[in-house]
Image (cartoon, rainbow, N blue to C red; front, side):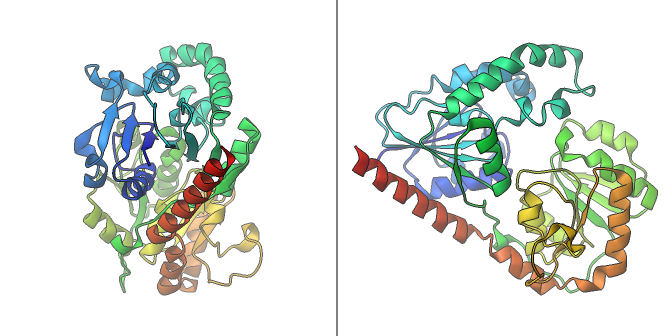
Amino acid sequence: MKVAIVHDWLTGMRGGEYCLEVFCELFPDADLYTLLYSPAHISTTIRSMKIYPSWINRLPGVKKYYRYCLPLFPSIVEKFALSNYDLVLSSSHCVAKGVLPNGALHISYVYSPMRYVWDMYDTYFGTNSSWAARIGMTLCRGYLQRWDVQSAQRVHSFVAISNHIAAKIKAIYARDAAVIYPPVDTEKFYVRESQEPYYLIVSALVPYKKIELAIEAFNELRLPLKIAGNGPLKRSLEKRARPNVEFLGWVEDHLLADLYASCQALVFPGEEDFGITPLEAHASGRPVIAYGKGGVLETVIPLNNSHQEGPLEQGPTGVFFSEPTSSSLMAAVDYFQKEHYAFNPTAIRRHAASFSRERFKFQIREYIEARLKEWKEGK
């Protein structure tokens, strides 16, 4: 069977790239198509594939400004040479799901509809963005929304990373989606018997992550906060932070595991479509203090139970705050400090195991095999 995998861009290892790793393991002989490719920032598993980056990858300095090329992306992915394949598997949060499958079965694993032109448009292109970006996206937004909806009709089967995203796919594309939660490599993480006094954020420093909200809260709380991750907002965030907030930049995996295991709790201030880092913290036996919207409703069991249906059968794994404000987060941190004894590290890690890499690999393989069987029988 000839397989093509399509992924938006390969410029770093984030949640989507860890899903892509599993796709590459399932189909090691597949051809991998992508807009951009930075080998130094990608895992060995992905680098071992036969990779076909688009022509835009050859532009000088494009890795720094590729987000400004967003209006070009639809026409680029539509020109990927996907002929003579039996299966096209797209791994999409932007435009990958819009490829032309040319007679192949097209299954799309979706992290989000194109958030830049839908629910997070103001976050990306609000007052914090340049005037040129705002004008450009004002002109292009309607076209990108129409293309996003129209191209979704080329997909034969959608798989969403969460019920939260399945609902967005239904609302925007009028399409149903199966739900298979993405993987967490729980074996990378471990539980420590004792912790240090700091709180932790592990995140790209981009607008929708709401890192500034956490900095504002911890500036007032005067509690130690470590932030692991890089991004375009790093400099402006550093200017806001008091000395109790430490920026670590990009952190290697083995050091990151120790940061997780040693923290009081992970702070997760933004609304995410799923959110891998809360489950990485859980795999380390650590609770999560999260904004109680989006994907965390499916992954974190809150001690303050107003967001959770039914009894806490597995025990609590975190605390939610209800408003996207620093004062609401501060109240959640205070509550956590008073109730920290309620969290059992062993039980928290056991909860994370239900999102393991092995579970994801099994479920996605079963789903693809079932769809292929239906596809062949329907021809």
